[in-house]
Structures are given as structure tokens and as C-alpha cells.
Length: 53
Image 1 (tube, one colour):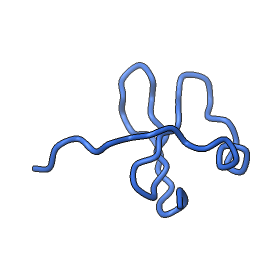
Image 2: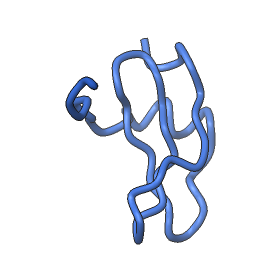
Image 3: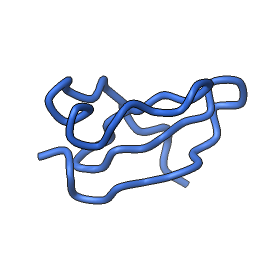
Image 4: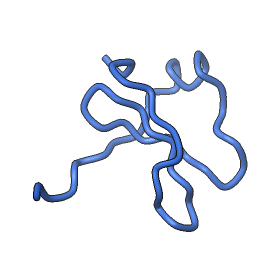
């Protein structure tokens, strides 16, 4: 099984396009995907594929 993927912050212009995440969640970029992560648990609750180019 592969190890953890490197995540980075989502650029502000992209956040402006998709909207702020709900309270208790944050966005991270992994490769070309944007994931919404629950802050308390670290679980991925939503994903947008091929948007973070």
C-alpha cells in the first residue's frame, strides 16, 4: 500500500471559485485534486478531481 500523499494549501483564487469550506473543514490540494478534510478527524469528506491545475 502506498504511503501518505503530500498535501498543500489550495490557492486563494481557487477557494474563491469553489467557496469557503464549512466550519470544521479545510481544503487541501493533492496532485490535481482538491479534498475537503474534517479538521477533527482528518477524514476526507469530499473530493473534486482534476481541478487544482
